[in-house]
Length: 162
Image (cartoon, rainbow, N blue to C red):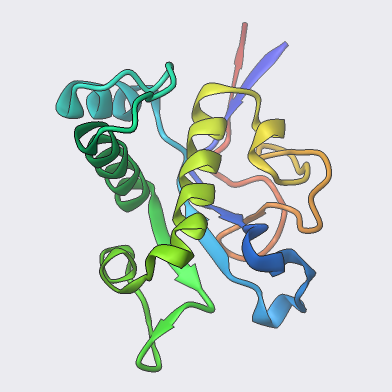
C-alpha cells in the first residue's frame, strides 16, 4: 500500500440550512486545509484540551472552552469562505465570528466538526465525496474539490511505500 499525502487546499460544502440543495453558484463553500499531526497536538497543548474526547459539561467555563477551541481550529484551518459576504465584500473567518448571530452558529459548528472528522477519523466522516487524495465521503451532494475548483490530485502529492 502507498501513503499518498497532499498539501493542497480542499473545498467543503456545508449541509447547514439546506446549503447543498442550492445551485452551485449560491452555495456556501469553505476552502480549508486539513489539520496536520503537528497542528493537532499544538492545539491541544496551547488550549489544554483533549480533542479526542468529548468536551462535556454545561457550565459557563465548559461552554467558553468549547467555543475557544472551535474558534481556534476554524480560524487556523479555514482559508476562505465562498458566497459569504459582509457589506458586499468577502468575509474572513475572524469577521465571521464577530458578525454571525447565535442562530447561525450551526454553520461554524458543522465546519469545526468536519475539520475534526478529517483529522481524527476516516475522511468518509467529513461529508465529502471521493477523488484521489481529496476527502471522500458517503451521501454528499457535492464532491470535495481542490481550491482550484477541480476534484483532482495535486502536484504536492507524495507517495511512499508502507
